[in-house]
Length: 261
Image (cartoon, rainbow, N blue to C red):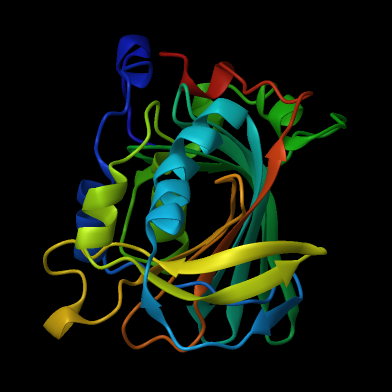
């Protein structure tokens, strides 16, 4: 988590969708697998998105912003049999996230604790002794100096966290631009009994070689609600997955980890 002033953390995030994709491509972001929830796919040949599909994809970031704070589960394979799973919430008005992380290796659990992140980086801390409740409540009991902060790297976990905290936007994207930039319909899946269109995102310049598919794939329902995003990284067979569980009415992100001093 990079050190910033209180005013900095409240500055509105106004980068557009293609700029986000370009940043992801530069970081070498990984892609998500279908491991968190079981899906059943309706097999079909991929094709360019229709105007309706582009419109719903364009609305998905605004819908995510308006639903905040949103529950999220991020699963990232770090290589060597190591997997990190983060369960938490994200507030798209402050572009902050908080949750618990668990690291598992081939032989079993390796590490666990609290994690916070924003657009500048992340911080880790042990769960405070004697404090029960969700991660966002526990994090309020850890002062800023109790966190181990760092800037993002190109690792799958970092790339996933950076993407997740940037996904919500306070306005819809341009559906015509999304369609013209190579967004493609890949199929239709059912997740927890609900139907979702699986759509490869638009291609930012340099993010997909030789006109190939975007490294990002989105699962969007008939109302433009975003359920899942996956990310591919060159050289990694297991992708990174972010699953969104909708508005968390009880969640209140802590201030303590971001307070100066």
